[in-house]
Every structure is written in C-alpha cells, then in structure tokens.
Length: 296
Figure 1 (tube, rainbow, N blue to C red):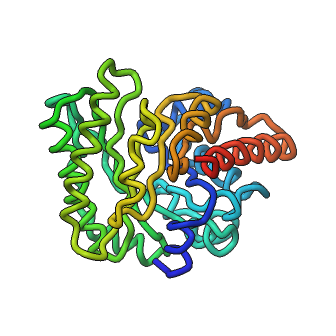
Figure 2 (figure 1 turned 180 degrees about the vertical axis):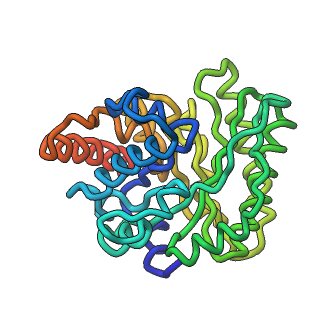
C-alpha cells in the first residue's frame, strides 16, 4: 500500500472494475462474453480463457487510472501475468490502476436469512503473498437474503473480523455484505445493514479505515452517513444484477458512492469482436460508469 494508491482510492474520480469472477461464476461470465462451455474441457482451460478476457480488458486503451481507479482480481489472476508483467504490477505501473484481491472462499448455506463466508484457511499466507505482489487491498463477499436484524449483525460482524486480519497485514479491506436485489424486504434489510455497519465502524481503532462495497439502495443517499464516516476510505456500489443503464441511474442518485461493477462493466463485450470493436465497446462502458460515479 503506497501513499499514492491511498490518495487515489480516497478521492480520485472514477470507479473500481470488478474482474474477480471465481470458479462458480466464471462459466456465466464466459458465456456472456460469447464463449460457451463447449469451448473448454477442463477448469484449467476455462481459467485460461477468462484470464484472456481479463487481460484484454486491462490492456484496452481506455482502461487506465484516469477513469478506472482500481481493479479487483481473482487469486489466479494475481498469480499470472498481463502484458508480460505480474498482473498487480502491470495494473499499477502500466495503467495507473490500484490492484485489489478477492480473498473469500465462497458462501456457507443460508441461515437466519444470510450466507456467511466460508472459513479461509491460510489467509495470513495469502495476504502476505498479496502484499509482496503489490496488491493494495482485499475484497470479501457475503450475502443478505432477508431483513433479519440478528442475521445481518452476524454477517457484518464476520466481515469486520476478517477486515481486522487484513488491516493487520497492512492491506485495505473492502467489506461486501451484498443484499440480494430480488428480495421483497430489501429496503428494510438496507436500513438494518446501515445500523450494523455503523456500529462496527464506531468501534474501529482510531485511524483505522475500511472500504465498503454495497448493493445500490432503494432509497437514494441512504448510505451517505457511511460515505462521511471517518472510518471509511470509500463506499463503492455493486451492480448486483442490474443492467448497466439501470445501475448507472441508481448510482448517480447516491452522493459520494462510486461503482465497482462486474457484469455491468463487461456487458456488450464479445470474444468475437475485433480489437477496434472491443476497445470501442469497453471505452463506452468505462465512460458511462465513470460518469455515473462522478455524478453521485
């Protein structure tokens, strides 16, 4: 973590690209990109293909720190190269994009309307590797499927417990307790989440910060108190399944929040596009998401 990276993540205009699809979500991401399951015969081949897609995005002319201030990587991406350099090093040195690493190992079964994160054996070792690779921070995702005060409190408490472990290694944690956009009591769950996060933030040691990655709320500016909290470096929004146009519109109504989109970022990209077509499409996507992030 460098001062320049911290300054960029604290106040630079732009958004964070989520390029961290894991084993479970990779086939869908490849399918949307125009690569069907019949194009690969093993997980190794599948991950080669998704790395090719991520590299193509990262090397596109528009993918620079001028609008894409950060990018979240899958562990296997961190361990590979882009443009002849280790991925995290390439992003920062060649593109001016601050690298993050997805560290969670997936979700537990739902209990009390939430899905907690699975155990993360060897997390300290992974964090040490990430720091050595030039990674600035981490991201971990859990899920909220209903407005259960006790479930949401447990979900957030687990996130902050892992965040403390991340912070102890000198990295910046992005906490992501995703609220499913399809649930009937989404607005109530969001109010409960605001309360639970505020309680945890108020208990942070003086000078310690986290980042938050939250589902776009039904009520615009609901999370503004979190944006303004001294314990928060930045609040970013996940698209959560909203199409890019709708996600951008919702984001623009939330002051101080910026995007951290995955599917909405890659919407419209195809393996069959020429380099010129691909570069035009990703530039248009980046421009629209950046504009919504700056508007918010």
